[in-house]
Length: 208
Image (cartoon, rainbow, N blue to C red; front, side):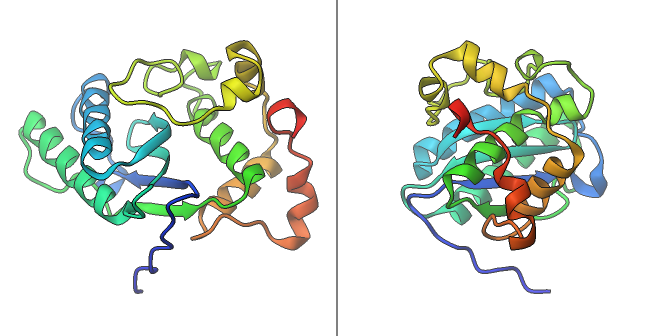
């Protein structure tokens, strides 16, 4: 099956994810993996002008929300996966593949979809029962200090951190999660028209 042609955009953000080979866990502690990954995102910002909105590192995969002012997601992600793999495998003294495949992407051209993708990403550790609240998970850009600027403005839109965290911690039911997950599997995030009304009931920042 051929790889889909990248939908290039210098305006709309992408959701990007990649998983370790054979769904194995990262071969070094997650705390060390996190340091390498955020450093490589910093390099991607410097070398490719990628702008990170949110990043969450899980035990064997990551979720990234970003946009590319130079319409160069393919170049940025190729370098990011290559460089992070080299460093992690060197640290683990391994020579096999780190990533199971190239990254998957979904272009998000709708503000409502963006809100739900943003919340979905940060709720990953909660769904995995690794933490009770999104802000308690250490390997995410929500609270951790990182060497690059974050380019979302949801905290400002919602009137500050307290309101943002309250919204991010609102639980999603199984149908909501399924709709968002299915949307993110598409090259351009979209919801089946029959399910659109169900999706639109989801509340965004300040009830949008």
